[in-house]
Amino acid sequence: MSWPPDLAFLPVEESARLIALAHLGQASAARARLEDPGDLDALHDFRVSLRRLRNCLQVYEPHLKGSAPRRFRRLFRSLARASGESRDLEVHLAWLGSNQMQLEAADRTGAEWLAERLGRRKQRANEEFLDLARQEFPGLHDRLRDRLSVYRRKVRADRSWPGEAAGQVAGRIAAELAADVLKRLATVHTLSDREQAHRSRVQAKKLRYLLEPYERQIDGGGEAVQGLKRLQDHLGELNDAHAFWSELATALHAASEEAGQSGALGPGAHAATGGTLDAGSPAPGGGAPLAGLLALVPLARSRREQAFSVARTAWIGAGAEALFGRVMEVARALEGFSRGAEIERKYLLSGMPAAAAAGVPVRIEQGWIAGSRIVERFRRLSSKDGVRCYRTVKFGTGVRRQQVEEEVSPALFDAAWPLTAGHRVEKRRYRVSEGDFTWEIDEFLDRPLFLAEVELPAEDSPIEIPAWLQPYLVREVTGDPEYLNVNLGRHEEGLR
Image 1 (spheres, rainbow, N blue to C red):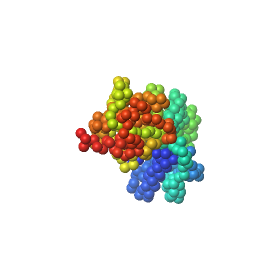
Image 2: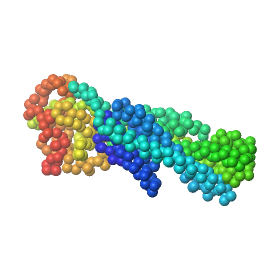
Image 3: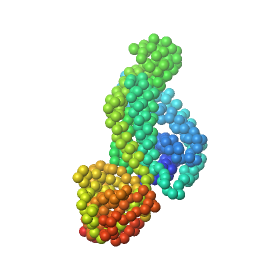
Image 4: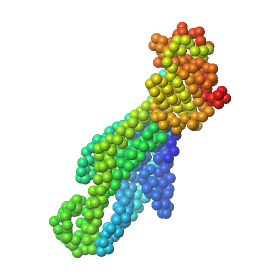
């Protein structure tokens, strides 16, 4: 799915609705495909879209006031639950089909009997789910779409509180979810810790869905999301193995009663029907389905043990700590996407003031990538302390502008830098402290140009030009488009 490049910078009220509307649209398209019996992926796509939509409505609930009432979420919960049985039975049938040939020919009757039993239930579950989807979803879709498309937002007249950016909120929630998953995983010690493993998987899925829309905006975001998907897949296989184990126990009980041999399983029968199936070597009994089902027991037991071994090796301990270390880095980077304001004044100078030239400069290379709605700046700073790279987006003009900035890796900078060709500047920056302010003097290396900037705590803060700067002052150029760095960058090719 394609997301707006400025999604993390937007007010959270707006981004949350854009994400929810996108998932709602995906669900609507998939629901229409349900009517095509030949579209084998439609049901899966509809289920996934619903899960993503429901997750979005949950995690951003405080910022969707009035747009997603509880009755809507209850309807989505009903749809999700109705699809769950169908999905589980689909997985069980697939496992049976792929493992049936491991049985002796005489024992395959039991697998076929179980497949027919599960298939009938799956058909009923599909019919019930499709009926619910046809009856409830269209109206739910239209009402939710209308509510999500418009919202009210309070804005302070003095702009002292610009509101939270979506990245800030997503980062904070991601950090909370990551800590919760890591804590839950630490309680999974044995195969019997089924519920703890299941809840870990559910929370990891929420975390993955939360981060997906922002993964391209954060260095390492894609790696973190893929790691969460692998965790989800491994714990999902463990959960499916547990669920089939319970299904097999129920089927054994039903088959023994059907054969009229409720005692044929021997002393392990009670344990088997309770879902543990730790019956040692139970007598097969006289019914062919029963004998075949008992032949499935070691396969199902091995599946559970192997799934737990894989999950424990990969995600219990060091594996989980490594993944969630990356996730926390992504969360912290997202939290840095604040909608803070940059308040500064800018002046054109006739030359380099001696007071500034006496200092040690920082070399700055800046380049811009122009988008349809935003302009993204990549900047590399080289000083005696080393090299640091940044990615920045600014909004607005004049004295007060909104700015969102994050530090990025040199590798990301190097990958983005070629895209800035024709939109670059190079300069040396000198800093001079004067009273409560720090003046920045930029000496451009690609043209005869000197600019002075000073950052202020408020738009109406009084500013006095320092004596050392006055002889070089030409005029104030705050808000003058000609002296915006991004516009200066457009002249690069003609000046070289």
